[in-house]
Length: 168
Image 1 (cartoon, rainbow, N blue to C red):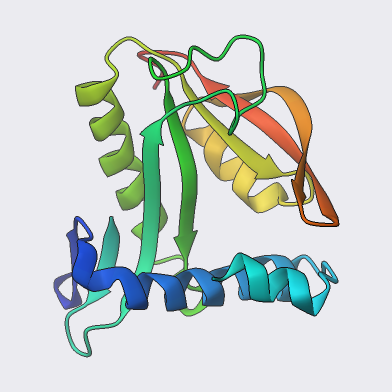
Image 2 (cartoon, rainbow, N blue to C red):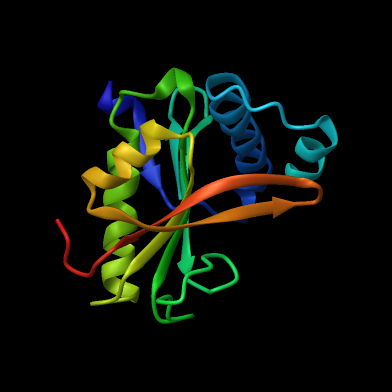
């Protein structure tokens, strides 16, 4: 199975496929698995590095990382543009338990080590998403706060998690 997939950095030609993958994984995770009843107009407005299946060219997982800014992670300890932020790490439901999450996390952590050496890494995770919290905890992230994520009239409660530099 591992020879069936390649892990590569996404590029501009992946924009449509990444958009579709984001929509699918968000639908599966939040609407179907966590039973959050988002208003339809919220999802419509929300949807306006990847793993790829070599047999059919479909993207099956992705992660998005960047410098951290306080607007994305509202915590007083964030050092904007000096710390790193993991914004998304999603794997299609039918491809979970195939090792894509750990592969993407390891690639992301390597990227942080290269671009933000000896700096903290931050993320927000939905408070109801226990599976993701457990996954992030395994990689050294710890809950350090919480916040509300507001999009239009919708509000989700998120936990803020932080990974100290050089954490295993």
